[in-house]
Amino acid sequence: MSGNMKTMDGNTAAAWISYAFTDVAAIYPITPSTPMAENVDEWAAKGKKNLFGQPVRLMEMQSEAGAAGAVHGALQAGALTTTYTASQGLLLMIPNLYKIAGELLPGVFHVSARALATNSLNIFGDHQDVMAVRQTGCAMLVENNVQQVMDLSAVAHLAAIAGRIPFINFFDGFRTSHEIQKIEVLAYEQLATLLDRPALERFRRQALHPDHPVIRGTAQNPDIYFQEREAGNRFYLALPDLVESYMAKITALTGREYHLFNYHGAPDAERVIIAMGSVCDTVQEVVETLNAAGEKVGLLSVHLYRPFSLAHFFAQLPASVQRIAVLDRTKEPGAQAEPLCLDVKNAFYQRDDAPLI
Image (cartoon, rainbow, N blue to C red; front, side, top):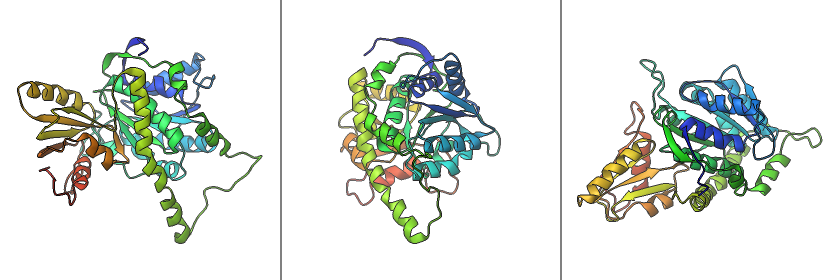
């Protein structure tokens, strides 16, 4: 542990980490993510240096669609690129998310997850926005509190570079983005020791450049298109173990234990809640109180939501579980259940030991 304690909110923690790993930030403000971009803009204007010894170059675009397009272009040019958004802003980025993921570019999208405008406008936190992009091919990492935003945002950037998969790094809007906590700040010198330099150099060498021109963005017939889509599977299959390895390094650095799924509670729990985001801290307190009273209950907190690793899921979930309650924070009208619940049910498909979910 560095012992460098500061008081800040989740947005500031995400901005602090992202600044270290960012060459270019393409931004457009939207509540409650705006302070992340404001912090990066302020630090860049003051000449603050990232891990590569230079200030971040910041571009404010005309919309979130433009910001995502700028992220895509900058990544193709070999610049580590980041943006910050939420809600309808994230939805405007969907076309470029597919491109960035399909081209295996290590962009990071920091999202203070927020409700979508449906029957009315709502600017408060839920997971409707991030669940609307879970199919794009981006990895999805989620934090429960401000300290986790500091620690796991670093994992998002490190794993994106080493794994060649873009990350959507999200935490609950307002509940975490604006909550002020006293946390341990990771020093840039510490983060530099974790960076996969060969992977970074490979990414920069693959940049578009007039000295070694290549053709990208072509149109393909189905026979080639489907083969290239399937060829990307190996990166997704390797990603859970890669993320787990970076979590282990952050654990060694900070003393705070992180896994793709963190379990809290009785080792022989019969009833378990599965959730992700800020609700987990509250559930954990309830679990500890009930455990002290002799009840066999637990909490499984999800951190890496995509790819959803069954091996890591079952490694953390007690085999004794008989009943599972899944807490989703989104509404998917017409579906049999919400996304996280469907993932958990699918995990137990055709298993003889399946609990009541």
